[in-house]
Length: 469
Image 1 (cartoon, rainbow, N blue to C red):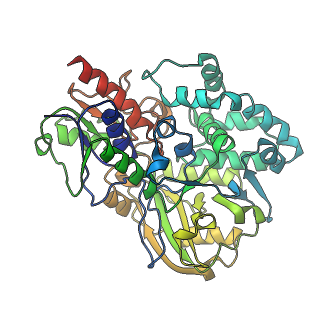
Image 2 (cartoon, rainbow, N blue to C red):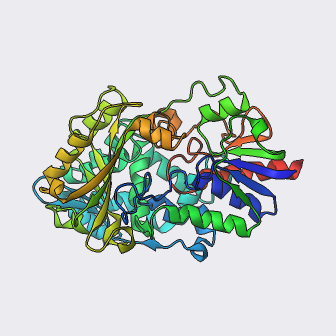
């Protein structure tokens, strides 16, 4: 009998398996797709030689993850590549605000009226970032806080809505960039704890950047899988699990799945009936005949580029998708240009380009034209560079990855109390009604992102049970 079986070979499932195998437990992973990866895959979606990331592409939380940093993933091929700028937010006048590794450079891009306010916001937390991020990503009770004072101060700053936090800025440049940071988790700007979301992304950039993985996000998953195999773990692909009886006998079962999928597989009925899924995304992967022709020079050297004319436009787009059940006319966009630092991603002289906008859950329309009209505002002539595109709306995203219910790439709405208390109101969010069944997906704290911390935290709950039995 195995000690543990993990269902789902995304970053969280693989991390959970690695953490258990490192502690001497026998582990096997079962994955429905033909390769490991979940939200961290790389595929040729458009033309030969163009390697795209179907979901996550830039990894501020990955490089800052306490779980990943404790593992020897570099020995297994993971290499972080840093663009000149982690992120840029261009404006229609050809200028841009930036999120740089340097706090001073970032503050200067906001203008003199907001430079001091930004420094006062982030500088108190940066010297204690490593402890803060471990404490923040280990909530609610997988570990005692190492620095409860800093964590409490962070909570007081970040728990109010982001609109409250950005009220300290006087000009639109800082407000717009920060609104875009909140938009990465598809949360309305007025929501609970959205200030913390934006602040985490900003601090992550200043601490270690927003890199891409050489060769694509698949490199993260492949490194985890290779390390697991060296630890004696097994991985079985092309193995769809529809009920617990499909799995071999084990002392514990760990699911890197959506809560509703787990309830169906394990027979938990309506246990997760109140769990909410959020807005979906419409994603386009581009093969380009050269770099994106950004008007703002800063955007040409940034790994990630946010697209939204101002904070009002961004807020309108987020509300449309998440609350008004309509596709925005001017979508807020997140774009990534990996090949500006990784020439292995495209043929010589060409580029891969990654972009998405928010749409209502389950939306079946085509947002391509609206996205490209937005891009043309900030990069005139963009369409002329397009060699091929691969589009995926909510139905296609959900078909590729069952965790993306309704096209929600966060596996659950990041709004209200569900930002912190997911998938249920519980001090043991990784446990389920069955004492031997656990959940470790992005539906559990600390939530979405390729960081493995949900798997790391769930593994703690599992090994405590295994040691008691």
